Length: 538
Image 1 (cartoon, rainbow, N blue to C red):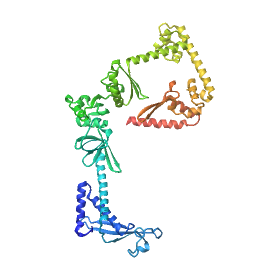
Image 2: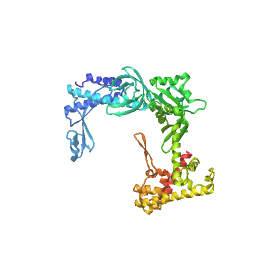
Image 3: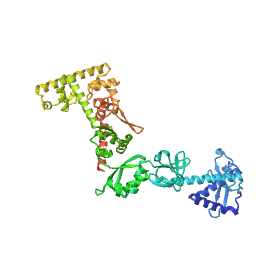
């Protein structure tokens, strides 16, 4: 094909037609044509030459030029695209390094192979422009709902026509029992939009919790207006879900608003989610109250929260256990996702059995350590005494308040408790010394003999060893692994060492050893207090 006056205008017409079809800028198509013609010209004149093509945007005339760059004599490498300053003087007097010598060359005639190559360049450029346009269009629509039409199925994944592009609904993002045929209409949630080698990928989902939240936002005007807020969503796609809502207007019931007149609003969401049962729960700042709501329809007798471990213990009536757990653990699992806490459920009989076991264990402890009968030991436990230390160092009046205890009995019990504690402490120190514990650790204030023995067993035998420990190594902590909270058992955790105590003891040891300057530490604390004060004022 020759670039003649007869088909010059046809270039622009073709560019316009392609741009309209692909919904991209005509200028990008013209630039692609220029690149393709330049590549074809290089195959004719030589690949080492710098051939450029410019198409006049008004008349469509293609101008072919050869460009040579002026370089230093010792940097001349490509004789076809570069020349020296001396050589350039013949073309452009006064030329200096960096100038370009431009000459027009005759247009080329495109043979069959060259024309095919040019076509491929144009198509590639057009595809790239189309991908950029699709990405720019959909990147801001992530986390929203979109309507589309099913085009085809590939290995269980659904390809969806979403207007000016395609989205992919992966097999694991479909609600279990859903099936689709080509041309079926489908509503999905745009989970993510990413650039990939094949172009922008729009990832769709129907199982994401955000999909349910977005559906409620469409159906409930109060949510759209911000009067009601969705605080948390937990789903078992296609089966059951829980959604926590709160109202910022006291006159509006958040649960009632989401349910709608005769259940019309929630039913619209249920129908879209293939009959997924939805529990709408009032959100509460108090974790215990919120959890009681989240475990509906089961009734809860008692809630015990361990904030450090982010765990919660729930006691339910015996007959409510199966309802609280739900089919295959569904109810408690969704409640756990909704609250962000690990939930342990036990019945009232289980709780009673645990209390009885603890009562028997403490009774046996006092009988053995204090050499008293079972009744007296039970009286101590019933009054709330759990350890020998509590008996040994409590005010005598507290022991005298127990029925049947007189001055002599209370004094004798405390003496026996102190003797037992002293014997245990002496044995622990001797065991620690036998393990190689140093006096610097044994005499360190704040560590009990049992703690020193436990440290020595683990190889911590000097104050320097102790100062290198991390607080969680002593007091224990929690680690997240693959979304699961894993307990790290501390060396002194069984001896009731708290994280704050561990931090204080370790830092004090480092100061005593001269590893940390107390002045710098005080400065850091003042900065922290100032930051917290600023935050409070804000």
